[in-house]
Amino acid sequence: MREHLVFLLSGPMASFGGYAGHERRGSGPAPMRSAVLGMVGAALGIDRADTEGHAALRAYSVAVQPFQQSMPLRDYHTVQTVPTARIKRPPTRRRALERAGRAVNTMITIRDYRCDVLVGVALWGDGHWPLDLFAERLRRPEFPLYLGRKSCPPASPLNPEVVMSAGPVEALARIEIPEWLRPEWWSEQERGRYLVYSDPVDGFERPPSTEQMPSEPLDRQAWTFGERTVWHMGSHGSEHGDQV
Image (cartoon, rainbow, N blue to C red; front, side):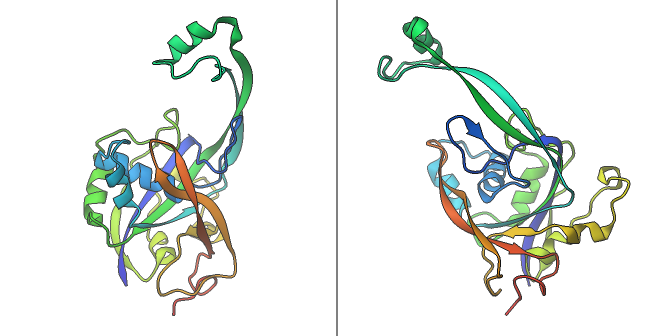
């Protein structure tokens, strides 16, 4: 048994990232490790330029589980880019556009979102900060919290709580979903329909299903991320990822 911090993310819209190209920003059904650690960092008041602070957050492990099926939404943006070969190191974007004149390039980019998001989060580890401090700051964050983008704030309090459980699957099952957030057809059995996406868990066997995801935050200023193994665990520890 160990301590886990659990909380609930809900919102009409969210964007949870993934592999991204210059013209496409996709979104998965649940936030990845980097998104959760970034949210906790915002709650603590860790500035994006605080490299050491963000590095310390990597000592914690994360698991997430959707509690209902979110719907995809795609948005299109028309943006202007400046040829870097012509405009080198402009002090501001406005100055770059002024210097470029008619040489700017116009392009369409794609942004993916998820609608009607309801996701449970579990976090654990022996890092610099105690989990009860995380819970306190998530209730009263230093910086605003977003579900992936500034246009996607949480629609309800996160209700963070520190619980004792054998692993993340059991911890996520302890999250209480307020009645007013549940769809009419929702029941407790609904949780079992969705996988738990988890960092590797000490003391548990590797489940048969895993994937590599760009979820390890390496540098918040440069927006660089490394791949990390994600376990697919069931709603019951005996199904996927047995404890040893």
